[in-house]
Length: 305
Image (tube, rainbow, N blue to C red; front, side):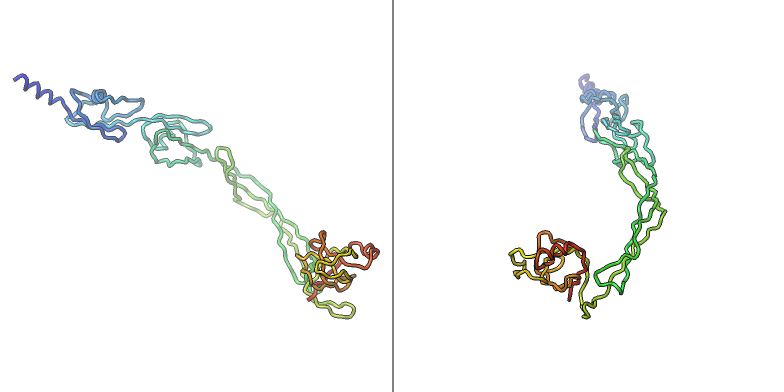
């Protein structure tokens, strides 16, 4: 009958179609559709600029057809102080840079892996790398050499030879990223002038003769010595001030230490003072005239055993 004939023709025109949009599967059935374009239109799938459709829009549907729609998207490529925008389906980062009309130099750096596929709204930065070499003078520091002097008291030193820095000429490689320095390294160095090392003699004597008596000591040092007299106060150790008791910096000479001060005699560290810091001592004397006569002078001080 005519009804059966129309029904069979209607069924024959229904062609199963599977549509994929960016990999997402959409199954549908196209009624009376002849081409790929017809299917997309019937399923309200609109296309934007540079979207890719496989098979082509004009392709005639087969008995069973798969249609793949790959959406194009924006990608920004940043280089040389400019941002260029391309619209493309997923391509490699390298291809995206090429599509933006940018050439990658041998030393240039791209933060993204060149073989990775692009993603929507991705930003790709091409960093221009340049280098230069400059010559830089640099001092070569002298070293300190020590030697023993058996004629000098332990704790004292004597300079035999003054030190003098040498001079080196360095070749320095500077690396720039987009014109900004990011690294510098010495790639070559030549000594122009050799340094002269400082040579210092170290004393080793631990006993000396004073007033016909041998005096043993731990070390000797030169110190700045001033003088003071009665103030009406006891010393920091609680003793009454007396000749032979002196003020020291306890961080240099511990209180209670026995000493011999040239020009003053035997003494004991028994007091402190606000201005007595470092290599400075204050000697007690009987009256103000003796203090004025002494003034301030540099003396050799022996720290006794």
